[in-house]
Length: 159
Image 1 (cartoon, one colour):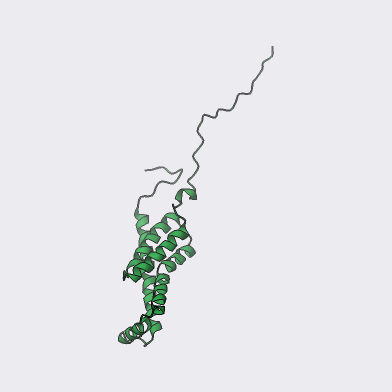
Image 2 (cartoon, rainbow, N blue to C red; image 1 turned 90 degrees about the vertical axis):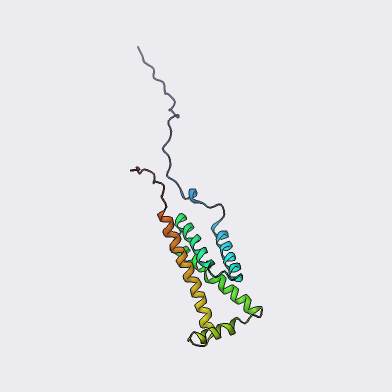
């Protein structure tokens, strides 16, 4: 007697193990450069409307998105500079070219503050304040995001 063995087709009904979440699961609806440019324009227009606190708000949003997407430190630093002092510098340049007395006002402000009577000192301090606002907002946004409950990583058990 001979026995015949047939090759059975492999059972494909068994579910395959779930793959770990990839970076694609953390994508934004818009590309990051478009969001950064929109934020810079919003801060610039807000500065035009005398909303001096918008660099902090933009830094807060950038910190939340940065903690969510986890860009490298170079990208986070570039974003802080892009959202803080760059729109303010552009606004001051546009106002100076339009004939506003930006230089004279900065010169007088520096003299009244007891600083060297130079417009560059006051403008530099203005841009530094915008940078500090954006940095503080970024830090707070990252800290607040880390306080939110995070989903468990694949392979971890929930207590």
